Amino acid sequence: MPDPWETLSSWLPGLPPAALPRLQDYATRMEDWNTKVNLVSRKDMDQFVTKHLAHCLAATTFLRLMEGMQILDVGTGGGLPGIPLAICYPQAQFTLIDSVGKKVKVVEDIAKGMALKNVKTLQARAESLPAKRKFDFVTGRAVTRIPDFYGWTKDKLRTGRKNSIPNGLLYWKGGDWKEELKGLRLQPARTWDVAKILPNGDFADKHILLFPPEKY
Image 1 (cartoon, rainbow, N blue to C red):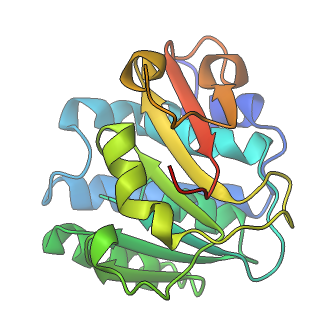
Image 2 (image 1 turned 180 degrees about the vertical axis):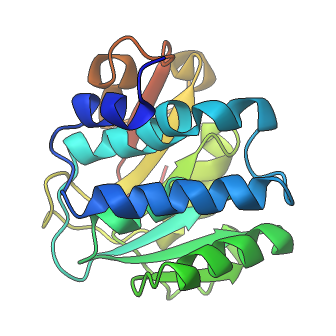
């Protein structure tokens, strides 16, 4: 069996060198917590690095963030994609929210244990956040149907073009997203095929979609 961290590094050679040991620390903490709280499918835990971490980190191939950017990770679960991205973008500020209290406590414990100063956690639903709270990016990984997720989060986005891609919702989606959005005005401004970023992995029909902060 190939070493999963070698596979990750071969897929993503542009990862910051300082990020790798921190990602390994996160994976260890996740493995420990997952025996107590079901954060990731237990049958998937053996493939956590190449299936879950790599999936989240595919965004690092096209995303560059300026200092002080604000990111909201909705439905963070065990901190995916929020914590891996926070590790890779220490210059940005991440707010990780989930409606399930025990998951938020786990993520808070992990972030504190790793001294991730750029991570805040909150038990909340996106639609319940104050209207004045605005973010440069909202992230979500297979939380629910795209139209529902966009409806919850579109008011949380501020417009801007300071980064490598325009501000917006970055959504990790598996399956036929085109069918889900068929007949709707809501359509992604950009799409990335994860299988092309991470070749020979288990990422067929998985995409990262960018939706602009517009009112549909």
